[in-house]
Length: 202
Picture 1 (cartoon, rainbow, N blue to C red):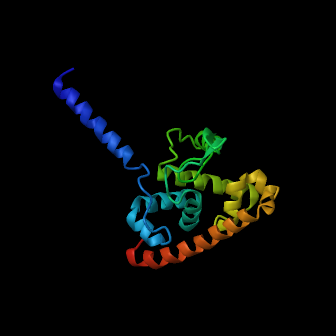
Picture 2: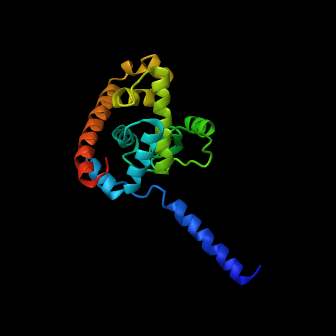
Picture 3: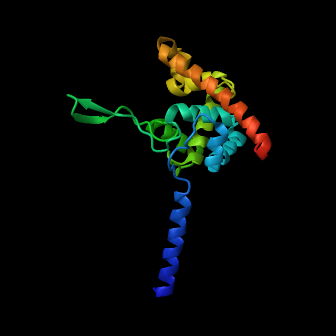
């Protein structure tokens, strides 16, 4: 192999790595209470959320409120370790990982069904698509409107079987959190309507 060809391959490989890396998580936005600040600091988020809204119908503000609750927009978020005797690590509390805190099994189901085998849980585009896929199935199977952030979150957290059994009624803390997700979704919606009109985003 010639030196020129070898150099060209290295350059192309570097470009591929850079392109892939640009979709990696990076640090979360600084102000998570202002949807306009979030998408101004992370414009790729808005592109991902709008792509998902077009494909699956899940509104941008519902996606954002759910991701806030699950990971605070930290693409590398994981559940805490469990400890024995306070010093011996026994693994993490669950396999939840990434922006959406998707579990291994649910993530594998998503990849198999959508044929997105290269999807990653720390990629905002893949995570938003996963959320759209999951919530659209909750609408199909449970009749939960895509605009209903509170009940979509309950089905997201408990699973569709748990939601059908109303397992959330035995968890007052979860009902409180789901209410907060619904409130945050409406706050994000109002904020995006305000700044989106100025910037031509919506």
